[in-house]
Image (cartoon, rainbow, N blue to C red; front, side, top):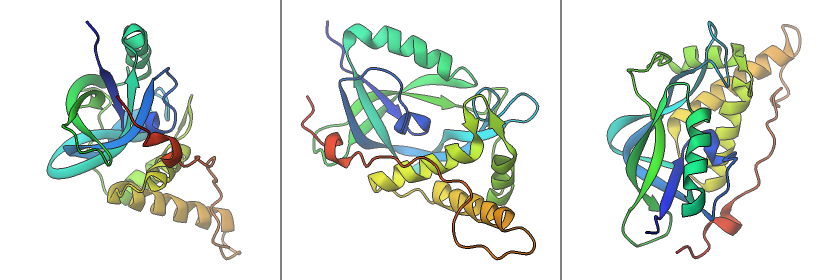
Length: 211
């Protein structure tokens, strides 16, 4: 029997899914909020010096935007094995209802990877200034933690998605980088020392007819 399988990404899967899919579409889930509360010791940090990456926390009335990918039935098991390995640092699969942007049909079910407080790398809530300081200091096998924050913020902006938590953290990180780049004797020039690769706007191809 054919399975319509969707995978919903709300972090790095938005800009780097790295698996084969039949369709991609921006959309959202409700009742969950994106937060930089998960520690990363295998991608954006290392053991003993974890970076900060996103997970989902329950929040009534919240709407979390991301990117959904429809995966062919024949390739689903292989894709999930690869994602299980990629997300092994504290994440587990959950099924959630999600809505495709600008679609009026009923919610679909998607697989989403989320890290809950019972995993050993969970860091939990902290002031955004403290999270920004940790991000600035963290680097792992997948690159700098700063790149992760900036690429996520840019990807959400390209989708027209509003996420105050991500936007404010990116602002704090950018401001700290500007201050560090300027040094004690030079004023900032308004440019960030870190320039994440530009993410091509997905809007042209994402809203194609789906099923």
